[in-house]
Length: 131
Image 1 (cartoon, rainbow, N blue to C red):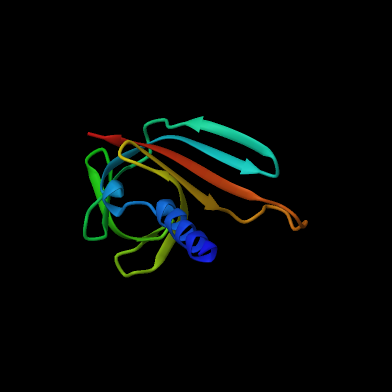
Image 2 (image 1 turned 90 degrees about the vertical axis):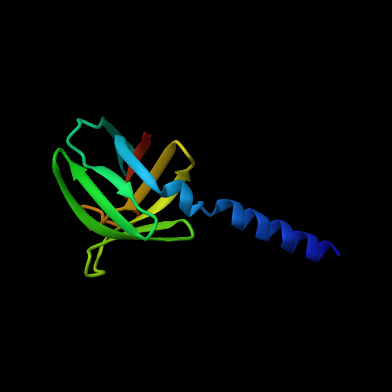
């Protein structure tokens, strides 16, 4: 009986970690970007030159900057969001750190700049929903 209860709890906790795809759909703007490299962080506020991202229900992503726009594709699997070209080539992959109706936080692992071992480098993007 205890094994079945622990399995049910584990399954529920895994399901709770998965973002709801409908929460992603809509329009998002970048508020800030934080870079991390071996314990050092730097946060920059969005200067307004980042494109607005429109996640559409059928897996299409429209990025808009001023009057110009481009279409891309996206895939949402578990806690991973991947941006693709319209030819289905991967552009970038993010881990979804947080997603709800008003806030989206994406993290992308980056390659270290130096060859030494035990390095960690990533970028975290903080979005808010545009109504």
